[in-house]
Image (cartoon, rainbow, N blue to C red; front, side, top):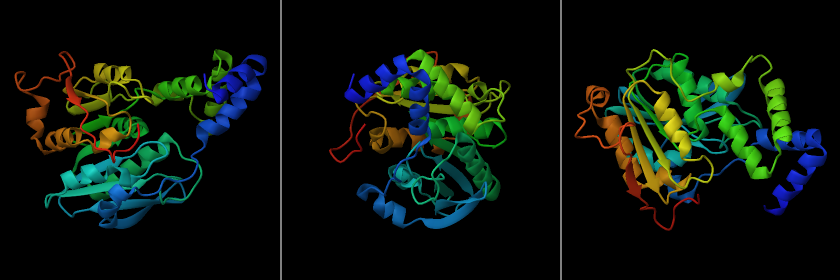
Length: 312
């Protein structure tokens, strides 16, 4: 354990409520807003900047293109819309409108708190405003929000999840392990989070999952995850895939971690091809053409990230 973990673990043993309180403040904190990476600046600068009102606060949106087909990109926790620059460049087309945003307290959107419900509300508003959503693409925490938005009413032809967790429980488990909480302190953290952030949710741990409606089997799903992801364990991709009744394609990478995966040319190419492909070919794929069905062996990309890639 590193010193911070050792200290929190020791505090968890002698004073679990105190440790849970300290952990809660860290768990909900967004920290300093991330700035645009120089690598992403040119694409970011070309966006048309707009705004949405979400729960009484402004959310900054970014739009590329004016085509009739809409793609919505949903960034992760403590991130920003410009993180999608490499994928945006690959998706730009006269037939397409690509939209990203900065969730409350992220990027250029003001605020110091946000939740998965904010993310899902933003996706709903963007889908309602633009229509004809051909794909919702989420990364990390954004995967959870994307599934929630689609399960609760957003219509999309395809869904893409990159480095996503299967449930909010995984967030709690991973965070608690990272800072060294005991089981009792972790339970206290979970209770505080539910009581203070979601007081009207009877069971948020079952609502906030990367699953669609049990009767939904028409939306093709592409999942991409790195074997060595240090933030969201790769086992999460299997849980998401197993819960989906529609066509599922799983791509596993090696050596790309949690963030560099967004800029890898092979990963970006696979997502672009998935979005470009006719929906019927994804919903009823040729078994010989897909080596990444959940019932088969996932395809593996070797790392092709350059030295300027984002750290894992």
